[in-house]
Length: 365
Image (cartoon, rainbow, N blue to C red; front, side):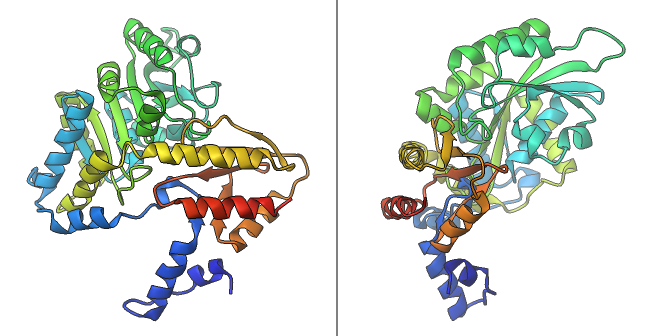
């Protein structure tokens, strides 16, 4: 029986089928996303032993500790713990804009592509899309996107950058490009928000510091449940007044959590123990890049800088069939277009899995 069929079967609680599911789940090489990671044993122990309280009342010590840790790490005044990165991004946009304003971002940005039209739905703002390089934009591009002072046009209010850029294959901004965008925003009176869902990957890859980012952006969203391996949660960082306003919108969006300290404890553990190890994920992604470039059906692989590998196949290649063959061998990933697929490395991918992936790829033409 195929592994995929076993994992798709009904899982019973407290019984053999559940154990069987876990056994075969451990055999899978799941490269669909770094969101599929599971808490490590050590993280689970910390989650189990943490003290909790009511966070809506500001009384959960683990959440307060996580927010303080993150704010101090970036040299920012305050932070807000939320269920997801989509929520932290959408709250930030809501805080920075008024209905009728416009948000400037790259056309591949997560806030535009993968947040359910939330900019329009939640904030009543329009979007100016820029054609950047692998999800990254420049100050000159931003300048062309700023609307003139004209009653017929929306008001340009906010610039959103994404680092690393998901659809850009985990591409990273050069620091000088960020500085130039910040300077332009200050000159034009625009706010600057960072979707840093995978920011720690960029920090490790580029040797940058959280403090520099904290000095540059008006608000920053960081995700704890991707490469850092926490089960859930993101943080929004900014000034005290900004976070006070953000807390109100979190409540309106339904994100006020009660005894969520166990989740926050996982996030604290991730920030303290799982950042430096991201380098291993980057090395694994480079190995995948090398293996794919040796395959005749691969036309191109976007330059790999972090933990995301995006490959383009040659014309006429049966991408769906390739994905199914790999799935039958216990290797999961998916297509992001008719001729492109994505693989993402993470802390659940070990050396044995990488060896198996290499062997399977060698036998597929």
